[in-house]
Amino acid sequence: MLIVLSDVHLGDGTCGHSISADAFHIFADRLNSMALHASWRTDGSYRPIEQIDILLLGDILDLLHSTLWLDTNLGTQDYTRPWTDRDAPAYAAKLSQITRAILKKNAESLDVLRNLTVTLPKATVTGQPSKKSPKGALVNIRLHYMIGNHDWFYGIPGEAFDAIRAEVVDAFGLAQSDAPFPYKPEDSAVLQETLAKYKVYALHGDCYDKFNYDEEKGRINSALGDILTVEMFNRFHLEVERRLTDIPPVMIENLRELTNVRPALATSLWVSSQITHNDLPNSLQNKIKAVWEQLGAEFLALGVVRAFDKKMVFDSVDSLELALQISRRTSFKTINDIALWAQGKIWGGEVSYAEHALKEPAFLNKEAQYIVYGHTHHHEIVSLDTSESRTTQDDQVYFNSGTWHTYFDLAIHKPRTQKFIPYQVVSYLVFYHGDQRQGRRFETISGAYS
Image 1: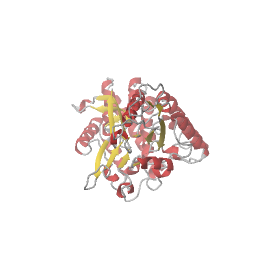
Image 2 (image 1 turned 135 degrees about the vertical axis):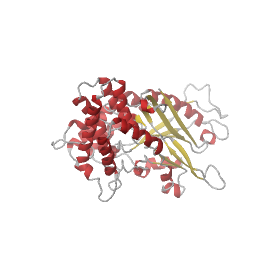
Image 3 (image 1 turned 60 degrees about the vertical axis):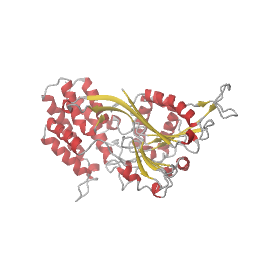
Image 4 (image 1 turned 90 degrees about the vertical axis):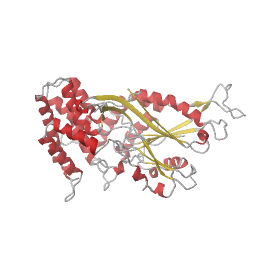
């Protein structure tokens, strides 16, 4: 049995809340049930499965969403950001600091993963679960970690980074060494062999997102999205708190949750809602907006951002410049109106990468029946192709593994009233091979709770 999950985004708590440990306890409880069902075979007999592989498909630990990146300033000797010199001693030290903060903050959740245990009843000679055996059959569980765009740092080679990975391996109980974590199945012979057994080809999927992946430099490098996250989203609540001393603490705490607001276009409404629901005077709105605009100007002036700006091409930097120009010339109300219009007319909040799956070599040469991505946080299943005979052995399907995440979701009833409902989302994929699960090939599991 193979389980795939992604985009858990466990953070250090400085930029919003991670999903609660309850999600991991529920997963551990259900794992026993899934393993038991997988042990029933196509011929109706019971034979306990011997191994469960769990693939963590990127963005499991979130090293980007941390204010710890911001404790050094541009121009100083110890200035460190995701895009600065990784050979400098301060770089590995910063990654170690953030990693340890995340592991400590999510100790209970990781303890559940590290100690996952599944014990199944032994089989009788007649192919039924034994009711007399005092000891069941212990199932071997292996956890594999692939990187995405928020944890790509674990793919950096070098002894200093090996030491950081070793702590992650130990915290999760991973079935891999402290060598650079794989980005593609081809980067690990064990992973490639495991996925091939289930006819699965899996990537995080960020390589199809130009804003969060630099195609020229490859994955083990920062993209423009890293800079925006660190220099604007991570910094915003800190600067509001520092400059506007009369802002209530509860609003500062809620501004930390900007990255958890859905849809993404509703972030301006989230900021406005904090002003409205905290009964702040209208005069503070312009001051808060001025903070955002100054951060935007400083962001666009950074040399590393200018380096992404291609001449004679309307690129991501130009798009951001245009958005910030609109922001400077309009009120929060106008920005909110634009966001609501764009949400309804241009962007429905759902992004599918299914078309990219059609171009994967593993799909084209039919080595894989199932193409799996993460990254979008949008759990889905899309039929790609099958043969004229339409046997299950020929079906090819695209899956997105979704996310484990806390969301603040904009209510669709009178959205201009800026009402958000918080809840947590959990989704994962299950694949079987051979005669497991009575011949079933896959399942998708998705749920939400308040």
